[in-house]
Image (tube, rainbow, N blue to C red; front, side):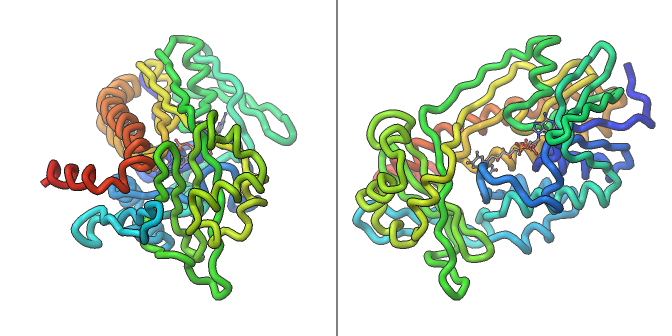
Length: 385
Ligand code: FAD
């Protein structure tokens, strides 16, 4: 069935991909309604719990450029020229990503980026309904139900098409799978992560080189740190879930201090609140989601983490989600009916997403194990030359 042109496209999720998708579609004059589970972060502040900053690469920047946001995001981003490797017992060494500063990546705050994208979506004409979580989707009647997190109030909505940008735990994916199985497989990594912090100096400066992605590789585990514009670094400790050391053996703040004193001694003095943060912050899980099908004829489609969540070691989950938005926007403009556009979208993007998922898994081994291995790096450079 062709969509009626005056009925809105309904997006589920106003996170990174949902807000960019809404902006691109609204800029084409489409009526766009976004339903987002959380309250408005511009009014109520942001939830903590997931990566505070992200590595933004050229593919993501290109997509932001399509929404007219490249300059605005870059004003708030910190350049990272390469990996600053803190090998055990050696001074830190910078391994550049490219020949010069034309080949770099950028550290951006998730909250700032999300708020810029929400502003852009509204400016373009999208309507965003916060504190509205998708709880049911009846595809036979094209009817969805959203619920308020606090008041539990339910509202029903008739839709033509649902676009699912509701992340790795997607409720829309679950509803689609119940009607026509999507061939879903989730592979959890047996490593988790915890976020910690290197605060700014007393006068607001950076305590270590700001223009780098810092890595402390330690074989089976590692720490990384990405700079924030206000002088701090978000540190992520990746450890196995079992064994020693692991999140099962390092549980208290005191045990975390002992681990850092032994394995990350140059990082420990930079982190005065390590024990408190370790005790307070949750252990995050990591995994890869594979789907055989991303859409339900012309009625619903998934993108971003809802379609292809991946482990974060290539720093490409958001970048890949942004590329999805550009592709779907173009294909919806090219094709008259949604089913054809969605089939073309999945055919174009699924192989790319699968390749990036595989690279992200491979990069974990490289980051924690190989970035301080001079022979390995030399071989890689020779292979690339
Ligand atoms: P999300 O960002 O998860 O957004 C989903 C949105 O949907 C949220 O706003 C949520 O509140 C909303 N929602 C959820 N359920 C519902 C519902 N039922 N109804 C309505 N709304 C709902 N990527 C990079 O490119 N670079 C990095 O450096 C990087 N680092 C990372 C580090 C870590 C530790 C992790 C975990 C991930 C990292 N990623 C990185 C991946 C990146 O975070 C994701 O790929 C990206 O957030 C995907 O965007 P999304 O909009 O698809 O999903």
